[in-house]
Image (cartoon, rainbow, N blue to C red; front, side, top):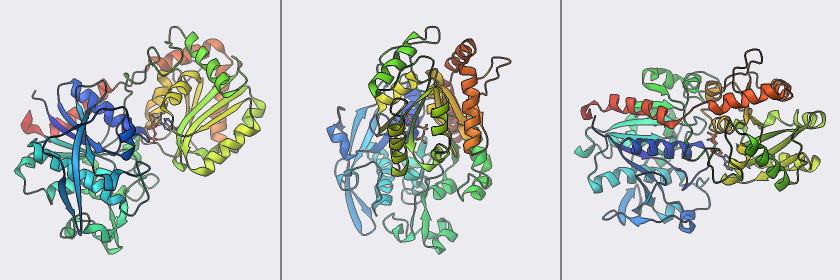
Length: 488
Ligand code: ADP
């Protein structure tokens, strides 16, 4: 079969810019597609912070100082490229300092819509300037969700895109990009009002993600359970009815683990390597991590890890009711790494102060430490309110850190309940979003922890799970081929 041309556009791509799973998923998917011989171009913004990075960027000829009209405003963008590490393909960076030279990746600034509309349009204009006709444009989350509509409107005249089909992946429906309908001019959509969701316009709004859901040829989300959940009242965040209408074009494809990045046998970011056959390195990582944070190391104490964005989605409000009790009653240690809402940072700072030899909290984003925590901890807690896929529980499985998770979204699809009678299973799940239910799961985990041989079996089950991208990429490819059959 002929290779496909795939344009993958995202606001984050590991290792260049990352706040969460989206960045890992786009990088891993691109890498796998590249390995299979497909012609993949990944496009993302050139954020100001990249200027200080170690990566080498090369200007893309001709695509320099290109003017783009955005209503009354006019911007100029240029494109540079850099190799995606451990791959045979390039990431293309849209440079527009006026929009992308900001403190963070995301902002609350009034032109946030313009930043990502420009990214979306510049990605298509890069194709035009280089006369590269994508078979598939793959957009990700609200930031690039206008791409399918742009192909039908602003760029519809260009035959280059005549055979292009679109996929929109919903990594998290909680972020939809809802902006004032006064931005239509900025977005060059003022003449396309009839194509937009009328009810929203009547209320003075435009919803990027909803528009993408209307116009993408196919929709995917990052687990089968989440694909079902977002069609219902509880998790649809207002888009459930529309998603139900598009049910036959909505597919759940669970994310994978990038084994190049996450492999305890050769991870350069962890002090001691290990495998399921020889877990001594794991214990050494635990000891070293406890020492680093001044925790009281005890091999019989279970070390519970947590690495997360600190947001309500992740279920942190379940913790205050149970953690002090758990820490008083049980021989456990807790290490938390997270950045996000101040109220959660304050809480963990307080907890670490109250239990200085048992709890460590590091605020901020720290990739090497995230690897180390996975490698060192015995258990990994993810009590998410909702979880589209979740990567950390899969990384945890691979690093023998037993996930304790709420049965929702991708967590339900990737963690199998451990059954002491049969010795089967990989983790502990709970259903109700209550502190008691989480406490119950922790108690079940600790009961198995006390039985050394049962625990070893559980750890080995977990480490043998295989959520590799090599397998998952086939599902995306099958979808791309179905959408773009002419290239078969
Ligand atoms: P989400 O995308 O909702 O944040 P995922 O579990 O899918 O959740 O992905 C989170 C990714 O971000 C993982 O790779 C995790 O290791 C990483 N991560 C989250 N918070 C931090 C942090 N504070 N420091 C380092 N890595 C983090």
